[in-house]
Amino acid sequence: MRTTPTVRSRAGAVAVAMALLAAGALAQSAPAGAHPDPLEGGHKGDDHMSGGIVVQVNSPAELATSFDAVQWAGTAALDGQTAELVYGGTGCSPFSYATAAGEISGNIALVDSRVSATNPLDQCPASTFFQKVNTAAAMGAIGFVHIPGEGEEPRSDATAVAADIPALEIERTDEVLAVRDAVIAGTAVEATLADTREPLEAASNLPCVDGRAGAFECDGVDLLSFVPQEDFNGAGISDLWGWTDPDSGDEYVIIGKTNGVAFFRVTEPTAPVYLGELPNPAVRQEIWHDIKVYDNHAFIVSESEPHGMTVFDLTRLREVTEAQEWDSDASYRLVSASHNIAINEDTGFAYIVGGNAGLVLPDQCLSGLHMVDINDPKNPTFAGCYAVDGGPGTAARTVGEPVTEVSPAAYVHDTQCVVYDGPDTRYTGRELCFNAAETQVVIADVTDKANPVTVGVTDYPDVAYAHQGWLTEDHAYLLANDELDEQTHEINTRTIVFDVTDLENPKVHFEHSHDTTSIDHNNYVKGTTVYQSNYTSGLRVLDAAAVADGADPRLEPVGFFDTYPWHSDPTFNGTWSNYPYFDSGTIAVSGIDEGLFLLRLSETSDDTAATGSDATGEAVSLIARI
Image (cartoon, rainbow, N blue to C red; front, side):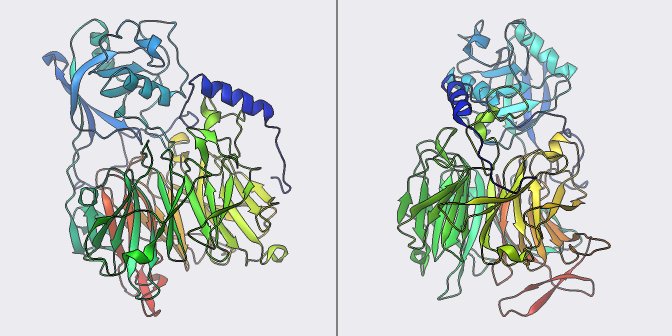
């Protein structure tokens, strides 16, 4: 652990990274390693919905079969693409397609992971999925199918891999290799890339009864309404946030999608009103969007390029009854693309993180905390950088594995920034940011925007990708998630609780192991209740009242609502995020391919695990059912 700021020498790292980027080595993969098989285990009960993502071999008849597949996040939608398979070696570069260059256009690329089966000179490191997919797309392929190496498993990925064609992985089996070898031998093999999952229908007012609310498994959480993304021009859903109109008390959801953000009035949560969209202004549009709210304005960032930070005055939604296309009120252009944004509403500062000047090149804050004064919401102004202790960032994934420090970045993936009011009185009243920074958790004092300093740094056992964290309301503990540990270390879903009572020496307090294998993504705390969006296992609700219990510190499961009814495997499908802060008790949840869910904790019984509050502020009992 480090308790004082350190400044790494970056000149050489920058030169190396820039040279790699110029050479086109734009790898996009997390550190490789063993992980649970996403095609086995973790499935729902016997009545879970059927279907999945498949590579269907149609002909010749002797090879006809269907292979389960996983799709990489950020690649194009599956739409029954049907064509011949063309073998492209490792697919690492146009050189890989040397013997098939004239055949790939209009067809589906089939490639091996590390070494070509036909050319031993065609070899590729594992961390090159980005260029593999985009090489195939540039050569005219309409789809991409990747066969993992020996001992590797199919995966989807958390990093910003983006491509205009769908990219799938299938398990390396004798049957798959027989298809590959037939293609290599010159057999015309036709295949279809398809999503055979049953579509979800819009739904309203479905209480959780006997473990189900319509198509969804649940326990202690009711479905108020579900709006499929097709109903609001969705093209892949990401983050969301909420706003309560201080004049009327009306509640609104702002939800990110590849082609912009959508607005809903959810005051009547069983009948949400779609109010239209703010289109994505970027040329290259990506699914990754993040939204936060300050002073009745929404602040929106995206991995799309060039996007910057857009500002929208939410009071314009008042009394609107019909959907319309909106325009922004202001924009901040000192970042091109960025992964996330946090806002400290007590100080009026926004913190853009994972910022890029273009493609994967760090912004002027080296992809660390890019601080913006938003006290005048329509006139955001640059305030400073925290660019010291962070992760290695995207450029560190350009060559080989594992992640290296050959990077110009001090990458912060997500953060929560607060005016500190916790047990470490040395920092009372200071503005602190608690950063999830890929390989570590970092606490920074950003009170002086011109001179921010590191307070404390720690890692933790089996770190794979420190993704996001949220403080308990007493600022004594940080509840964090690691986005890749379920895959990399073959473990169940894990919530890591850090003791931050000594800010200069943060440490792991305990770990909570869930009974699922899904990947955890975003979690938020309201009172003593924790709301977690855990991809394929949906919204998970826990009670943190005993987190400081000296004899038995713990998180107690309260309930769940499974927004993804097909499986619970460790893949990047299902829920992205949630917003639990409406006074009404409505919980907004986003589903990547599904849409918008409005949920509420079921009321009451004698078995009470936590308390929330309704619109009048009175206590509402929440049942402990698990």
